Amino acid sequence: MLSEASSVQSPTVSIRRRTCVVCGSSTLNSYVTSFTRVPDKQEQWVTVLANGDAGFEDQLKASLATGRKYICYDHFDRQYFAQRKTDDGFELIRNRNPMAFVSYSFTGIF
Ligand SMILES: [Zn+2]
Image (cartoon, rainbow, N blue to C red; front, side):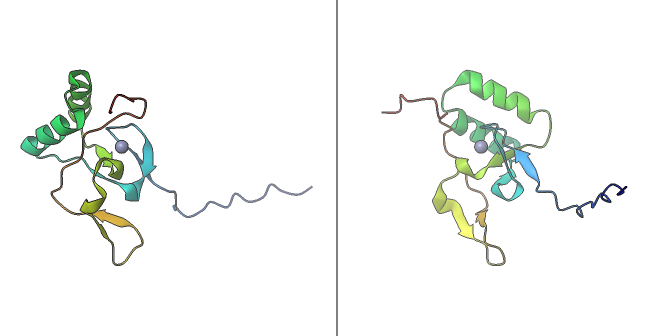
């Protein structure tokens, strides 16, 4: 009887994922950036992202209060990215603010 295939444990090459605090999607580690921890900036980002939605703003603030959070690149304008030289990914140019978050179910934009 054959022994069970020795469990070949792949060397810790698990693809890391982060949950975006804004849209809640689980995103590749390379496609998120830390949500700013600078109080003034955080306030500014939250205001921009919430875009007048007080409920969403409160929710975001509550999440941010619990610790380090991440925001995916979908919330930044494409022009704020630079191609990485060593990698084939994109990198956010520092000190850029995100855009207003418009949930995909929201169709009243026009
Ligand atoms: Zn996101």
